[in-house]
Length: 433
Image (cartoon, rainbow, N blue to C red):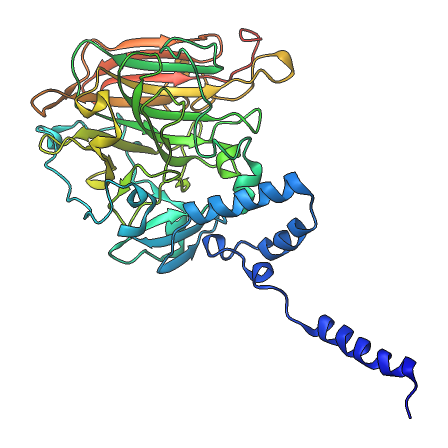
């Protein structure tokens, strides 16, 4: 007859075996469908369970944000630069989280502005104006019709962000003025502000400027602006950008942005909030542009056009020759729901003054405009859309450089490029301490 001790020992042994053999919990296995192939998610989930309060809360916020940003996809494409492109059904893209888009259909592109086909397209010597594609196109794969390619947000993107609450937004700025640098944003740009504007178009060459600090960026873009330069500022922006914090590398990437309150609480980059409605299955906003311009070598530029649909009032975006990317619904805006009061073309950098001196973050090619073609960054064929939906040259263009010793601008006009300017610079140098 078994002793009392062995009677208790056997069930305890069985219990131990069952515990060791039991599968991990569903939560531990769940890598969150929002970032399903993000290696290390399961490990991070297990680690998070061992972390105290603040770490666990941050982990939960990250998982919630990934679920919000990353939508179910019909196909996934792995880009050579390690981006993951999700082919998301058009009606499931983030913009359709907005209550005003619930149950709505994506709109067809409106008519282009008049004189659209008469834009000057020459580069001066036949080396500019090349077709620019994105890195993920090198796979030879494409997103199916009825889907839109969206760059997947990964857990590492959120861990890299300086603020989860403001992820995917520009730093908040108060008392914004076009010529203000108190916020650390510096510009070299051309602008017009003497009329009412309903769009803009230009070509800009693509570079990969050096970034001096991981929380700085360098971009080149078109701004369509309305409202005062106080807290009611409305902007729509599109161009190329290098931002290690946002993208995790130094590749130039096609991007969009919008705000209705001077970058305070509304708006975002790309698809990081419910705003921009994408209509094409050929371009991923936030994906890398390739190839880049080469100093003393071949120049590659992209053509951007923003215009307001005269019938419905939405703001549309075109990239390259005839590729409509999508639109910002007019209900997102206050002042821009009617028209723009300023159009701006040019470069912008963030200067955090690392080590107490001016940043070494470059703008454009990193060279001053005086070096000219093949060496300096440029905008060419500067045009605006007038009240009658005519695409016309940008008249009375004003040039502004906040810190010309750091980043400068020089303009001109000719029969090849229409109205144009060279811009940019190296940042910190003997004239920019």
